Length: 433
View 1: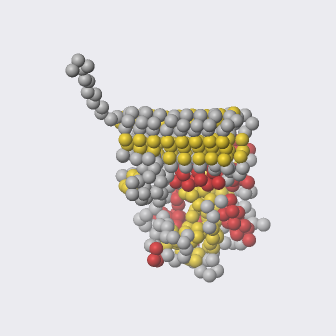
View 2: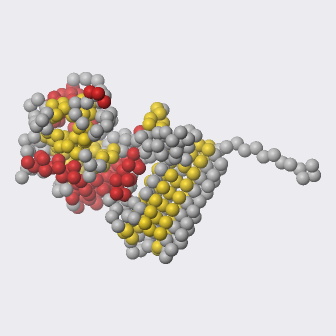
View 3: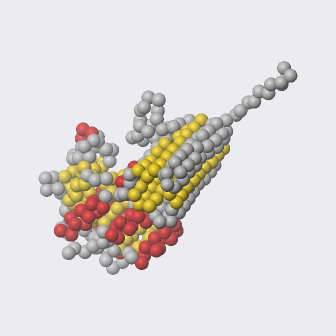
């Protein structure tokens, strides 16, 4: 049996494109942050050693978060001081390999969510041929603006072509970051050579692999299962759907209150301390977190509502992700994402459908980007307060701690900490007239 590779998990990328959401590796999809649930999965697959690469902003919280896991798996945390590409991030793992620089490594990203079957296939392929390196190739019929693998009939990879265009694809296999390298030192030397060359771009890692391919055997492991990558904030809904799909049956904790005339339909998870009151309906797949209240005649469907939330009277939450400690009352939350602590007052609605029923776009770092969705509501940052009767237009984002006054229709993004109110003029009529 081949030596088990050391797992290198890249968790230090800057999350600026995820605004107004915070660190994507710390988003919860159930009881645990994504980073923890990913590490739990790797441990169950038999991987015994992990090197996490963080950034200066998240190093402390990641180190604290993984401390309890060290009872079961060896974990080291390295830091990439500057965001200078994936190649530099991988080089930060080198000191932790110590006297075994030629050990095999398995490179993944915390924000790539795939089925366990992919990791099993990667490890099995390496176990059968430990002299070779392996890259996962996601099988896609439609064009995807990513890196495509050039592969021969023997599944040997000869190159990676970045964004070749639909007509120039060398294969239908898109490179995703699930890579087993047979010898870390050989890869690290190739990465250093690319940085020394001063070639423009941030693709040093991909160029290093391409430089190795004439001599080092790289083979593809085809994959066609689930793949969600947290790149933009609306991708939270894709990852949510994946975790919801893993709920089987109606799992209701003992320490809950479920009123006799509550309706539970389909695959539903109800965490301890949750309370669901008369007339409410939870339609699966759905996740209700610990201590959360689902009030009278409320409806939650195809959604995650995490811990200690208040879903008040007649509220509807559909196809949405609601983080901890959010409050909603007599409102509509549709195809939306709420960070922790959002207050969504009575009468508020997230519009999710354009008048022309076309694809919804959203602004990312000043650029309008298509979301790939014809239904997308609002993305609201932590501790924002939306007053009664606020309505948000499709794809709008509201920053952390923002305050939106009553009756406001939000057509454009609101920055962190901004206060937005509608000017109201009152006409006083004297009864004597």
